[in-house]
View 1 (cartoon, rainbow, N blue to C red):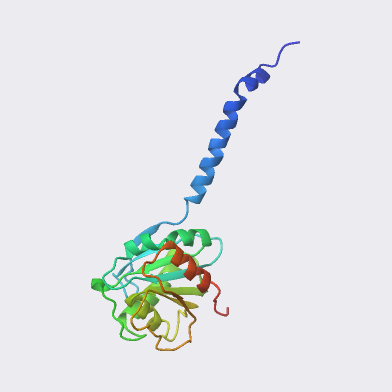
View 2 (cartoon, rainbow, N blue to C red):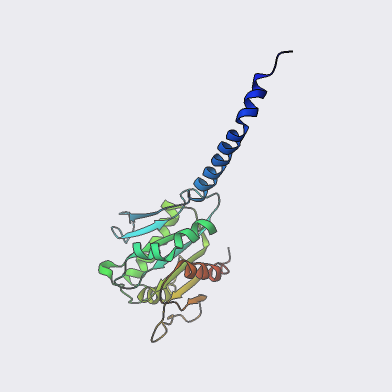
Length: 216
């Protein structure tokens, strides 16, 4: 009876085959874990009132179902790109399935002139733009977080009438005088009294914010 050459080859090479298969599995897992959305700089299109203003967006283009959106506002004279890096919010978003947008102040300074001010309108335009052009957003789960003056603008913007309606507002930082919302407790507020905005802070804010959503 003739011997089976395949059996002989398997006997000599099965260890190598197992090693190759293990490497393939590891690479597959790594690629899938690192394959989430990336943060990109974009410009508001001309058909929006805030046309020309820039922002950073971290959002999957084609989620299987509508996902929450979080807007993050930096303090005056701070950089949105650095906040994106330091906060680790993009990593939290990839693991928890939500989108993030980082609006930017003109000249590094937010204009906090009331819920109908130019910057508050810009914030609302960002929600509309990301929802229409960048991802599939769940309108019942839109949140806004801010640090320093960004927190003050967030607390003011949620008081505007009309859409979008924010499900929760997050405040980060330590203040001599705690910022207050002009409309009181109309929108749930979550707090992180940390000096530095780290990934842990983003996880804390998400855990608290995500418990709130609007009626469909």
